Image 1 (cartoon, helix red, strand yellow):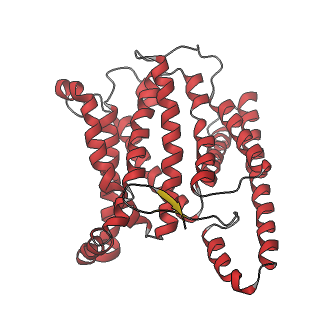
Image 2 (image 1 turned 120 degrees about the vertical axis):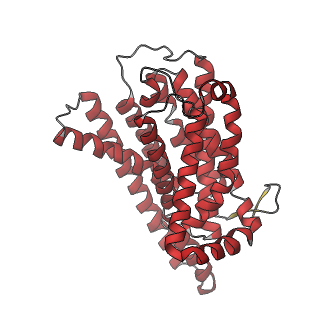
Length: 334
């Protein structure tokens, strides 16, 4: 939001989203080139992407929702005041938890929900500026901005959980999975540029760009890879806690080395985020003990299948895996 609040002409959000997707695609191709060489990369693309067209097509769903989320996020930042943006943006915490239950059949205890509530409250306190007036900072519609933020948070939760499902079901290499994702993100981002057709015609695609804009695009691209690694080896809810703890570490380091004074509001938010993380860890430990006790009571014939599930979903209730029956996106239990 800072990059959009600077004085002067604003950059087009659709071009920022598209450039972010181009950067991610270029990085993935360079990594595959480094790992396999030019000939090996061609073989990997032929065998893992073209040869597995049905698996690759499933990445169309999260790519559509991720691109939608990115565009709506920029739009909402232009139309919401900082207080409303800080509060409503934390809906992604709840949407991630709800979709984890619906899609991955993740079991959340009362301790988990308490931790998620504390996390939301702590993040709101840390990000809110109580001195700001409660009015739109942009020239657009406040209520459309609010709706855009809600839809963006919902899209973020669904896309993240669905992508986690694909990573763990298909057990694909992270870089190959990202390339499969980019096959659909790029066309969707290009199509989204039609919404800024007038700005493109009048000023060109890079009108209003600055060094800050380039930094935002690079950071968003880097964040996408970190999210992929998190979903491959952990889960979306843990990713949310990790991002929140990074804010805490940033505040503490800024206070220690940059002479930034932490206010009582900052300290309260930090305490709530840390408490939420501790509570969530307690909930996971309790679930792990329960799983081990139940596993020990299973007949030997059932332990093998249960071990396989628990390897892919450590610390969680062994889920009923959800798979797509066909290309129309219908879901069923396996």
